Amino acid sequence: MVIFLSTEDVKISAVTAILLAAASVPAYLQYRLDDRYLGDVVEDLTRLCDNLENLEDKEIFSENEDTLLSKLQNRIFKLIRIYKRKNELSMQEQENIKALVSDISHQLKTPLANLKMYTEFLADKEITESQRNKYIEIIKFSVERLNFLSESMIKISRLESGLISLNMQTQSINETVLTAVKAVFVSAKKKDIEITYNGKEEINVFHDRRWTSEAVFNLLDNAVKYSPEKSVISVNVRRLGMFMSIDIEDEAEVISLEERNKIFQRFYRGVNSRKKEGIGIGLYLSREIAVKQGGYINLTHKYSGNVFSMYLPLDMKISKK
Image (cartoon, rainbow, N blue to C red):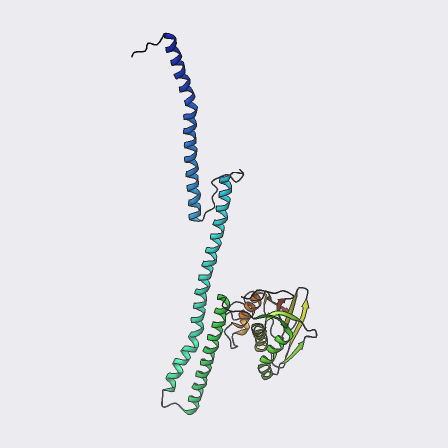
């Protein structure tokens, strides 16, 4: 069947087609614009992902605009800062391990070399009895030094790796300090050094007695080692606001301001300590023990000596580490 359209019908059909075509143009343009916009967004997001991968915080979306994309960018920037910090800590930890290994190898060289050399000397059948005894004494001293060094290394590694479990209890700090004083009494007596103790008030502090006593002993041992004979070392225990302090005053040569910034470093030996026995671990350990318990150590001086002060918080419980 054939349908014949009038001229008027043809005109209406043509107008309708034109209107439909005209109506579809904005939709088509909108589609193309949306497609281009999405493409730009995907490209920007790709660049933002590249920032995260390379840990760079280059701005892609304007931070002045309160949009979902700018908020996403801020979150990614936070992640980048966190990852950067973790990388820095990891690198620092690796450097610390390298430094520790280097320090240990350096400290081991002298006693090991002495053991090798004087053992060979003892093998000589022509040495005198006096020489033999002298060599044996040097070997004994080297073995003791190695033993002390190995024990110190174990303590340092445990402190730095967090393997030490502090037995924190609220107990008398006075008794802890007196334990350290008793331990150093013999070496002080050999140099005719008098140790005075001033702890009129009984002070209870949340602390680990064994490790705190060792920290105080190291400070006292250092004072005895570098103080002149027949001098006086004063030990004072007192309250100071939210902290209590253990002050150890000696009559040794005043430590310079420049060295005060270095003296608590691991294995550091001051200018005045070159002729004294030691390996530069005691003060470092004391500081680490204080820090582990929420405290710190400070070094000042007076007109005739140095004052090492160890501070621990009062009325504050620290979680076991």
